[in-house]
Length: 121
Image 1 (tube, one colour):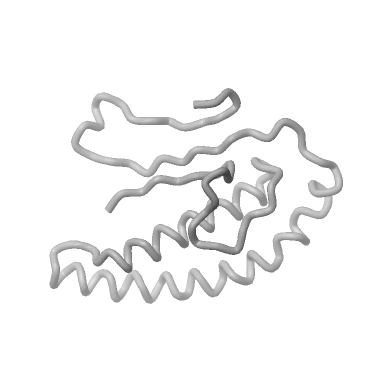
Image 2 (image 1 turned 120 degrees about the horizontal axis):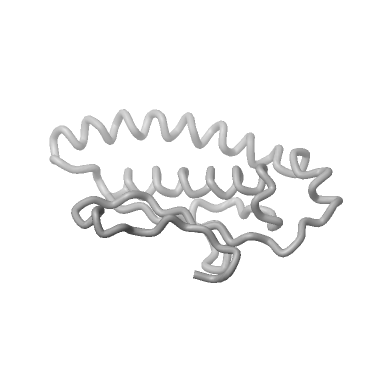
């Protein structure tokens, strides 16, 4: 882990279970102009998130029935829900001034983006 990066990591007691891991790299210094205009700049992301959450709601319902039949969550459902969760975390981190970079409009983040979340099925 880099200095200024936070993650709870795994513990020895978590050997048989996996919890989502969220890594956020702290920015060196926030730019005042973006702090002032942060909410205005994020309005397009809030609109996209609104529709993604509606789609995720219906995906969860479909995934639940599929999990009843298959015994596990189908991989496309898992990937979509994980993507929505990651996108929501990136927008929320920017909204809460935890990072200084504008979040990308993508369900999969760039490798160098300061907010990463790891989720396993």
